[in-house]
Length: 111
Image (spheres, one colour):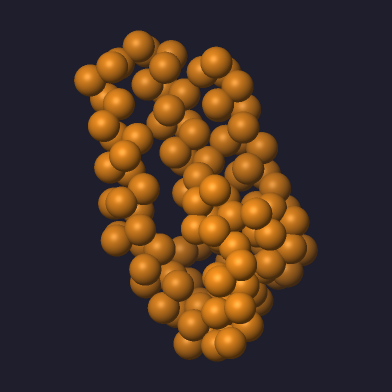
């Protein structure tokens, strides 16, 4: 099961990076985006790379059998939202306005 979670995370990352490369926009969270990517995996989740990080974390917890680390699966999304996603979404609202709002309303942040 850990291997499947790891592979799912890897697939999400590759799909997200492919779509962002097609749109010729940055994958670096702190840089200004040059395009709003809403195609491919971004039709399903607004944050496929962070979701893949969560899958990697879950895979590691399962692989090492670290039951005491299970609360990290709840804490990680909260931390990522506060530390990165809120700022990124504010920046996208400035850059893309209603287009971002429309996409955000119909596309979940995680899954």
